[in-house]
Amino acid sequence: MREPLAQRARPPLEAHLRGARERGRKLLVPYVTGGFREDWPAFLAAMAAAGADAIEVGLPFSDPMMDGPAIQEASARALQRGTTPTSVLGEVTEADVDVPLVVMTYANLVLRAGTKRFASELAGAGVGGAIVPDLPLEESSEWEADAAAAGVATVLLVAPVTPDGRLGSICQRSHGFVYGVNLMGVTGERESLAASSSVLAKRLKAATDKPVVMGFGISGPEQAVAAAEHADGVVIASALMRLALDGAGPDDVGERVAAVRAALG
Image (cartoon, rainbow, N blue to C red; front, side, top):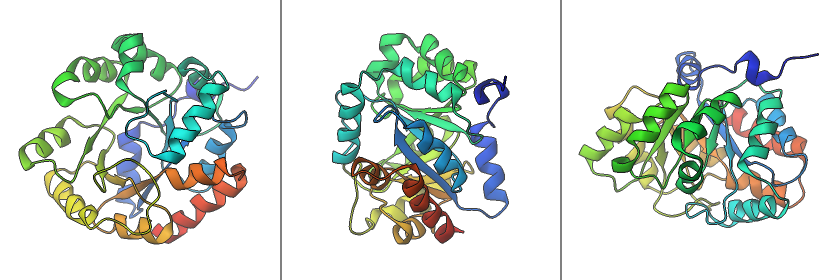
């Protein structure tokens, strides 16, 4: 019987991304909401096959304050199906995907489980990183320590308005990669890339040698290339979830990821 991928160990998040960057590759991190439909793990496989360097998996939450309409709808559908963090992580454990996986969640779920237990559950599922955007830097030390002890990288976000001193602290404490937020607002598709994206990317690249990945508002290949010009790569989320919510299957979403991959080089 084939051993689950998680037990065979997916590659460490930061080392994997650094290695790809050193080979001259722009990083691509697509997103999927766990449990939004029954066959959702097939999207992981399709994204990996299409050239993802890591994949972000959202744990559905009833009040996803950082997320726009597409991911809110995906979370609502997942919750209506009875999806829980435990069910998502169980399916992640079995997923035949050999790129790092990063969970995106909210502090309520982390704190309800307890930081040590939650970190252990992520590690047990083969998850290499976690994004908890509503956990303030001043209150995240316990989570960061327990995550690090479990081998889970804490990925921190930097906004366009983050002052230089705080930006430096976030870069120092972020692991896996530093997540640059292209714009002030929630996730979602945009017609054009915010001007603040390139400014923030340059600030981050001047402050850290960790991989810098930009996200929020990236809808397709052209915007991905623009966002990655001064950064190491991009996250693409809402545009993919909108496709899937409108009926696209894993192969269709994989084709969109492959198009972004081809454009990034």
